[in-house]
Image (cartoon, helix red, strand yellow):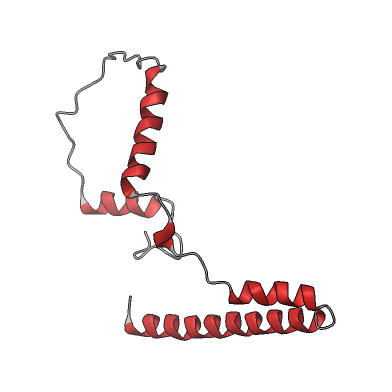
Length: 124
């Protein structure tokens, strides 16, 4: 990532944070205003704001639990699975190659379709 790209990303991230913060403020301002005459509903909304979020450390799952879950899932699925059928097929060995010139190679590459997206670091 170039320095100009990094700086553009930082600017865009700041704009996003500011926009999200403004949306958050507008939402809660409108919610509080809408419930101004209903103290029960208003306190219900305020409790949502004051409630501390659950921390990730309160979860009882561990990395070992995660690994064991998938290990048992794989074990269960392979117990009833039939073994794969493999069939030997005759094929020609590639032991001799024709020489290719740089010009021929350039033509082959030029004829290949251009398949890439804007996220590719180096377009092909």
